[in-house]
Length: 195
Length: 175
Image 1 (cartoon, rainbow over the protein chains, first blue to last red):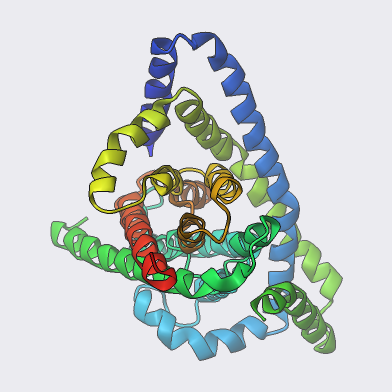
Image 2 (image 1 turned 45 degrees about the vertical axis):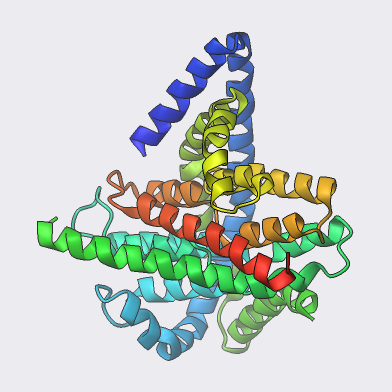
């Protein structure tokens, strides 16, 4: 990530210099930084709401019921997480929210899951195996209802906005399978090296 | 049908959690506020990381470096049978959610959402997520500094999703 950050900024500013647009860089910086804060501030409400709701679901025992049903499946993917650990509940909520296309709900649960997995992580600054697998699933976004795209298709006057659901499900399955497979390979290689 | 499901999903979720909680005697408002507090601080903690990411990607895009990268990769991808119009989208998708949404909308505008390109773009947009953003925000939230292979795995997923989207949308909608 340090590489990506440095690479983007250095090549970007170099390109601006080459194109004779170095004077605009300051403006871009300010605009991007403001957009970042806006996005992050927009997060506060959504995040507070969903984690508040998740706490209610947890107290009501809804999460532990769900976890009991789906834990066997998720355990296959996360063998390092102990049975009944809080991380399971959060992972479950995150995956369910993703599948239903509820992006705004998926992120808070995802971050909660990271927090729980961090408690199990022996090296606090290095990603654990479970975290990597979890991110593989999230970056491939296993989704059944691509809500945003359907909404924008409808807005653009599509005759059948949801016709892309079938291809999206197939494509996302391909992407997730590839990501999980890659994760599996890298995990094994990492273990051999003793990392 | 699917529009109805997506419209009802969140309200259903909220009603069942609050309803069941209340029926079971959970102090719903107090418990909610406790959890919300946690969410609030988590969001605040993320601000610096999101700002850093936005600035890096913003400069990369505005300076034309992104266009240059796209220009270099385009001929290669066209030889592989990928329509040139969706190449920029495929490259931007893992980097920036807003930029890729803007590109998809622009393609809808120019070629129509029901054109083959419009459908391919929809599939690409729907089937993968903003890898770089997710990886950095998720790791930043718990202070992980060494990401190991997570970025690479995410990008492998994106590339597969991109190629699969083009192939599947094509065979699905013909052309």
